[in-house]
Image (cartoon, rainbow, N blue to C red; front, side, top):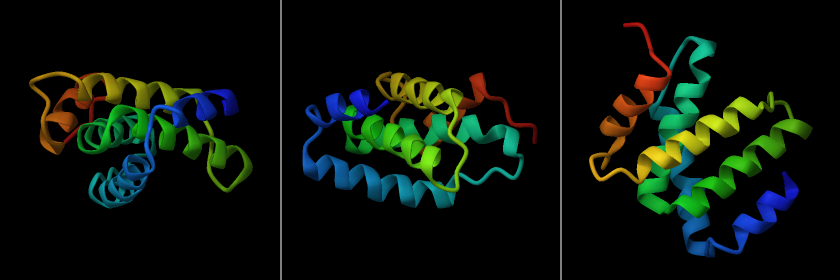
Length: 115
C-alpha cells in the first residue's frame, strides 16, 4: 500500500491533494448512510465526486492514505474499501456523471441502498 501511495503522489500536485482532502471531508458529512453495510456506497460516491472536482490521482491518493491510517488508527481498513474507491473513480470518468447526484445514482447500482 505504501508503494501505491508513493506512486500516486507523483501524479497529483499539492493543490489537487488539498482540494481532495477538503472535498472528501465536506462530502463525508453529506453522504450519510446509517447502515454500516453501506460503507462501500459511501466510499464509491465520495471517491467519484472528489475525482470529478479534484482529479483522479489526488482522490486515489487520499483514499489509499485513509486506508493506511485505518490500519494504524481507530478505523477498520478493508481491501473492499479500496475497491469501492477505485469503482467510484472509474465512474467519475463517465461523461454522464457530473455531480454528486449522478455519482450517488451510479454507485447505488453497485451498492444498493434500501429506501
